[in-house]
Length: 216
Ligand code: MN
Image (cartoon, rainbow, N blue to C red; front, side, top):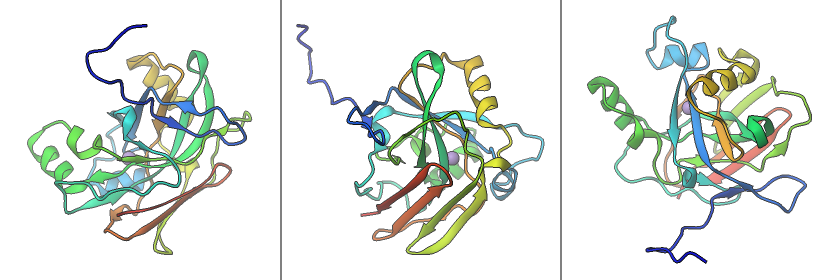
């Protein structure tokens, strides 16, 4: 057995509903500005197509765990998203509910300077996700919501995505070879906003499930 120079970190995983075999996360791709109303609230041009950024695999927070308020921001934002879990050969393994946590103040600074978004998007514990529901051949198109302390903040329809799930996978496939273990966050509807320590965040996607976590 290979001996490594430093200890190997545990494989990040997400539970799979109805199975005792967890989903091993390989990497996390995210789509930006995939809902027109959110693109407008972010100051985007209506002609700008969606695009990709990424988070490290170990940014996932499994269901049930608290999310620590991250360092170096005073404007942590929620973005509720449908998540596609990729299976063998780049197929759709299943779907989950995820929140693309964002250091909005850092992101605005990076945008202004034309700098990369990594520290605004790919920080530790920036990707809480629900259990993965294995796909049954139906791609979710229904309601997507997020509430904070019982107050609805985001309430959209997956059907309003600019790139559909199928189109996202085609576009991603032009840039990367999707492999089993990849998670793809598909973008957020309008209504993003700030989170504070002590907030209870609850998200849902119709036909997929729900996610709940606390900011600590
Ligand atoms: Mn997002």
